[in-house]
Length: 195
Image (cartoon, rainbow, N blue to C red):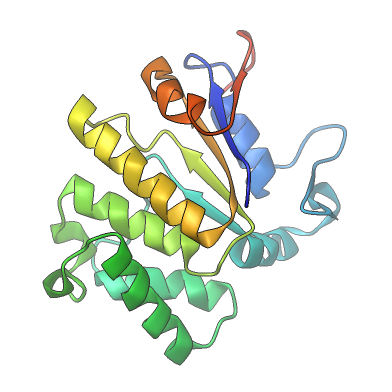
C-alpha cells in the first residue's frame, strides 16, 4: 500500500513549487529531482511529460478539465497521453466514474456543465486512469465548505487506497491534517519558500 503524506504550509511557503518539481512540471535551477527511481531533471520536457502521464497522477487546484469535452473524453485524454489503448481505458474510466459515485447520466455531459463537486470527482478519475504509482494533490478543497471538503477527502482516500498508489497532498488548511492523522505522516513546511 502506498504511503499518504500531507504537507502543510501557508500561502507562499513553496507547496506548489514542490509539487511542480515532483511532477516534472518545473526543473530545479540547481541540484536534481529523482522520483520513482528516475532523475527528472535529466529528462527532456517531452520525456518528463511522458513519465508524468504514465507514472504520476495530478489533481490540480483548479481541476484543469477541458470544459467543451465530455466527462469521459476528459478522462480518456489522460489515458491517451499515457499511451494506453482506448478500448480498455474507456472501460476503466466508466468503472472509476462509478466508484466515485458520478451518475451514469453525467458521463457524456460536457465538463463545463458540472458542479464543482462533480468536477472534483472527474479530476480524481482522470488522475487515476493510468494507474499511477504516485498521486500529487494540490489544494483541491480550497473552495469547499467543511461538509463538502470532508466528503471529498473521504472519497479521495477511498479510491486512492483501492488503487494502492502513494499520495502527496498539499494544503494551507490545517483542518485537513485531521484526515491524515488517522492514516499516515504529516509534514510541516517551514515559512519562507516561494510558491
